Image 1 (cartoon, rainbow, N blue to C red):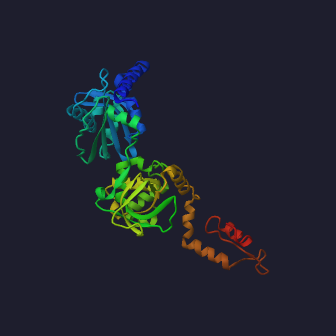
Image 2 (cartoon, rainbow, N blue to C red):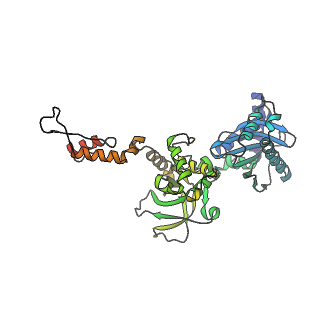
Image 3 (cartoon, helix red, strand yellow):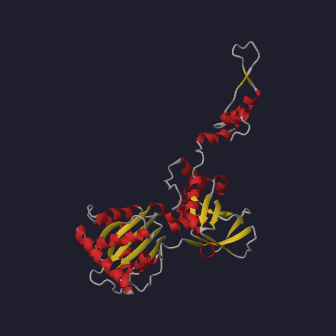
Length: 413
């Protein structure tokens, strides 16, 4: 297997070669190349190279995650001569400060001092325009040197959670050549929320999966989504849209006006996981205390989850009163995970479309008309003889077709 020294040397040579070929700066080329690996590692999804440097400030790229009000800033430390140079903690700390300072200064109107034609103007303007909405800032330092793995503690800045991350050439090498893969999605309910999640296990045993049903608080689900973002719903076939559609607006209105009714009104979420850890229960118990989930995925209910997250940021919404029904499927054979999870997501999202008119079918006057149509004959057309024809009021779609099917073919599906 290739060694770290060889990998670092080749990475440097490729970066310098690409710089000449693309007629770009060394740092821009390095940043773009490094971020490509980070996308593969699922640390980011669509980073934009954007170089800006001023006294006490520096950024090399960014990613705006609108769905979680998160901004990710990347600060590069590139050495064009030494491919495995050691970088001390003070240097890394200084780079973190430069990235944070850019964000803080932008909140205060830094964009006014930047030429509109500069690529950093749009970012600084975005930060300013979204002031008051930001929930998280992730500051990444990426370097082709080797760090000591000491990071400053995460901090809170005016209600914004600031997280510091480092990827050096050694970590990049580990990911690229030792198949470390992306960070494991793990939720420990005890450590993160101070309690377990009560689950009811189904009695039907099979070789493919074990299924559970639980009630999870809207606040807990929103905070999990706040931490993991799109990674939590990456297997969901639908993406979340802004609350302009009628379905999302309905979720939002329920959270605003009747959060205690959320469980009754909402269909809940369907989820899968690679592993579940239960505490203090035997394998035969039907009710279990869920302590930890590994590889958790929401395969149906992405709109519900993301809407709850937005509710978390809305001061007028009390998510502690909102409860969500959760179906949890634990796969026994992980080699079949992609197929099974894909099928669950597919079938959960392929039900017959329901129109708004279908929901009105239970209104009292519709029910009354339906009953009348079953008991009152249609008048004779010349009003002289007795009635010979019945009439049918179709309260719900395809009700008439279903009735005909049952009359003509008793076992018609």
